[in-house]
Length: 88
Image (cartoon, rainbow, N blue to C red; front, side, top):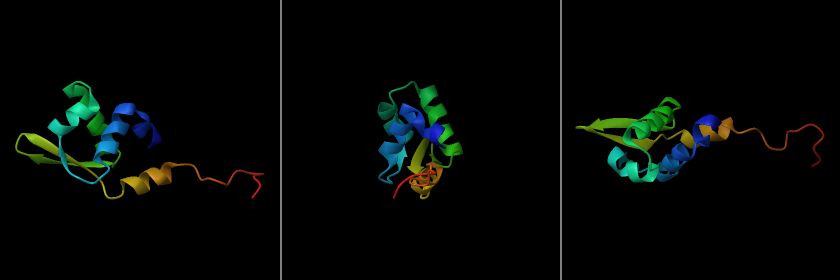
């Protein structure tokens, strides 16, 4: 999961979608600042990781961050304060 969001393009896309609004792929193109085929690739990776969902609207695709995306990312982070020998 962390490898998915470690990519700067995917992180920008997630940050742009973080407000929960649905956005057309045409609106995401300037945010990603990559070629359309690479944008499709990055969005597919985010979909497969369960961080965004997609819906077809005519010839366009609309993307929305999933309701559990932040929980999925938090679950992927290592626990803080559980290292052996750590003082409290």
